[in-house]
Amino acid sequence: MDKLIIEGGVRLKGEVTVSGAKNAVLPILAATLLTDYACVIKGVPNLRDVNTMLRILRSLGKNAELDKGIVTVTSGRQKNFVADYRLVSTMRASFCVLGPLLAKLKKAKVSLPGGCVIGIRPVDLHLKGIKALGADLSIESGYVVATAQKLTGCRIYLGGVYGSSVLATDNVMMAAVLAKGKTIIESAACEPEVMDLAEFLIKMGAKIEGHGTPTIEIEGVRELHGANHTIIADRIEAGTLMVAGLITKGDITIKNVVYQHLGALIDKLEEAEAGITKTDTSVRVRVKKQIKPINITTLPYPGFPTDMQAQMMSLMTVTPGISVITEKIYPDRFMHVAELNRMGAHIQREGPHAIVEGVSHLSAAPVMASDLRASASLVLAGLVACGKTSVLRIYHLDRGYERLEDKLQALGARIRREKE
Image (cartoon, rainbow, N blue to C red):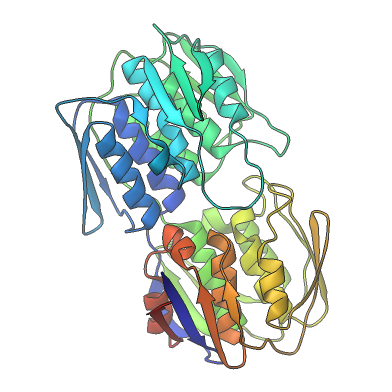
């Protein structure tokens, strides 16, 4: 396994370009299972999760290759409807092959998923939606087994205990595009990544309206054709880089950014009195004066993203005053708290709340990454900590950030990758 060695105390400066969105490309790759025609996906980041999804597609009978940011998917000779545990268990997003497999082949056997250890994330909404379309479902030896002679459109409510579900919306939407009649998804996820999947499906010939709102309407079609598509920019990577600039009191310009996708984050950073300059495709961040403490509550889009909670916590650890961070999407998503405290942070957890008392400085320490966004928060803390920080188990980081250390090096950071 690899680790990152970070020597803190460098003020980041310069320009950096954001990669394509991990959370958009994974369901879009799954959607290629809906057609026998070729699909070309551009702007694809070279990530562990992307390569896992490509392996899953190959195991299901597709030819899928990534070359210089472009994935080409074509159909192989033999189709398979079983998504194996050894692959699906490593990445939760791979469960979204259930909908397209069932819609195209009338049967699917998909392992219950794995992924980051950030609390319980059940698949009940996925199953509720697929069953509503007419599928017969069972759980057998850790696999979801689904069959359907035909899928029929209907009205489906996908609201959950913690709000809408992105992957459940994706899964049901992909199953519904080949169902007979109209499907209406209520309490659908509104995230940009869901919109990007819908746009790809529309290019394939699907009839979808309302994506980006809580009500999505889908009129089923007989078949889909191939399509070319470019993935949207990764808003979470953009946000992580913005925080990297602010935590080091730097001045950086982040390119390939969709400003509209960052509204809640930018609003909070401006509340903290960060200097933010926006254009159509870039954001410049700098510290004009001392960053102020803020309170944050994570919510479904367009609310503050749970995937930026850990990174903002790192920023607040070195911000004078008291900040309160409330996690309403995954209440147990605080694995990074103990590691940040090992670096000298003062964070106290109270249920779904983290109370952060800013300190004058953090101290370098060996820290253990527990999940994808926690990994990013520890890297950010290392950028500002006194001494050399070792971030272990960065395979989590590699699941969602393309060459993050290279991008930070280009901004002046003293960071390198080594073998553990």
